[in-house]
Length: 390
Image 1 (cartoon, rainbow, N blue to C red):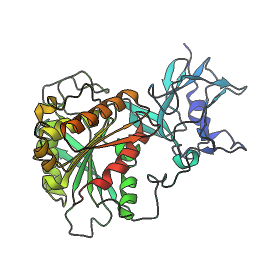
Image 2 (image 1 turned 30 degrees about the horizontal axis):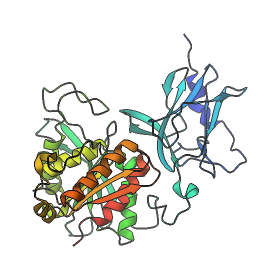
Image 3 (image 1 turned 180 degrees about the horizontal axis):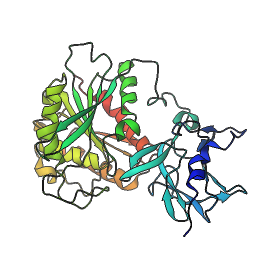
Image 4 (image 1 turned 180 degrees about the vertical axis):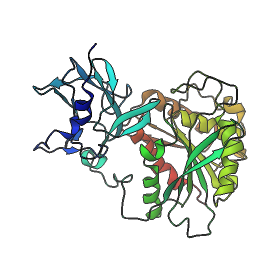
């Protein structure tokens, strides 16, 4: 049995000198780590020390990752360090890991993020360095007033367990008496409630929009999208498939909304309540909001798995009365990346069917991005300014 030299692996990214080229350490690296490195053209160099390994590969997360499909074979130098430079990546946040003699290992030089049902390495490729477009820094920290992300622990009557939600409060919340509208924002399969702030930078996006006067100050609630009633074991799988029925709808309606309205200064009515989510969270959003229109007036679906959408039959015929629906729902927003073929086709098909049924809706396309966080950052940046407007 071969043993990977763990100390060398752990120290690998601290031992390489900065290279005299156009590259810089990624923002997502741990302190002082020199790799991964982002080049001016968007290509990325990865490096790891594994002198005892026979073969090392870089594996991007997901078949449609912005890093390419992979796996990429890495080249070993005479000191046991393995390196590969991949072609220019799609700007944004991308999961990855190393295959060390077939064993999946995180990069000790990278921060980890909860994805694929576990802590996973990721690299941030700056958008502005690759696509120097105006406003491409919308998810970067700026010298503007900042809100806070708070952790709220509460007990769920539905599950009989303690749960926790992350709550963004806008700048000035503590010093005011204002009651704020609320956006409930859900993550995707294999991720959890930390996703929208760690991977998605939702708090920074809202800070910047609010500071620019483009979005109404709002509270944003982010909960984990899995819930199991007592006795309904085992829990759902990381990918959102299998296991007992997910009770997240009941948790949102019976536990989460009452807890938020009872804890924070909210405008506690449907006209000031929105919900949106990405991928699995987008599907959950459509199910929950369209079943409970008495609770929500603003709806956003980001890259939801929509197939064979029928406006007359879907969601118990909620779209049958177009005039009534349009009067009740202030915004129905549908988005997808142009490079996530299946999700884009489903979203576009739903948009066309709703138009034909006379249902007002917005369809947004994120150009060139796949089923990844850059798509959903752009989605939120377009969706949030539309909320809670007269």
